[in-house]
Length: 234
Image (tube, rainbow, N blue to C red; front, side, top):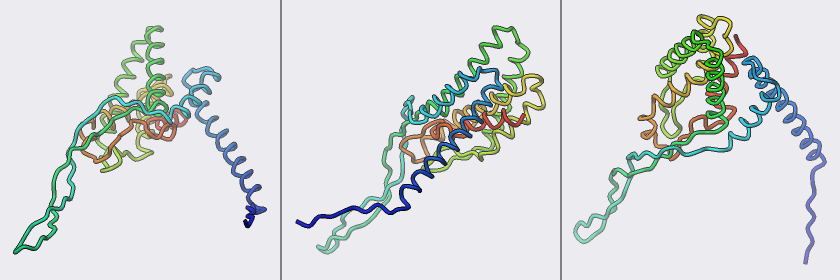
């Protein structure tokens, strides 16, 4: 039997090592940026880095929370007999489709847990004025996000990447006071979560996608990035 040898090009190993170095470089830079943003919220460095790792690993986990039914147009073919000859005739029909709505751990639950933690901390400090500012900022950001968000068939609810952080920064500069980072993070994350996703719940089932994940891109989702970018800009 003939024997075959697999030859690895000489450039393959250096190229692979270069990719590893680039991955390590960008991972270090990105983790440092996210950790710095969390630290500006008053979160200790070790906890901030842990939250980053949980966000990164949690981006692989989607938890189904609901199931909706929708009807999508489909093309069917029926046979029609004419003078003894069968002809295929296409026609439009409606087919029931199930849409699974899920929540991503890294892209949605981690930002939500941070906002809830900061809210409980403000309650323990009896900072009720700041809580009112927080509620107003989230309501404003949600309303603006809802007006800008657009449903995209087959994908989900789309929102321009830079709009949420710019909205959050503007609100934080106007009413944030000494709590600008917290106001920016909460309005950036919750504004997208409430305004773009939850307020468009009824539209989701008509987009033709079999599964829609809130925060589905994990650490690269609009919810997560909006908060991080907003905190770094104030």
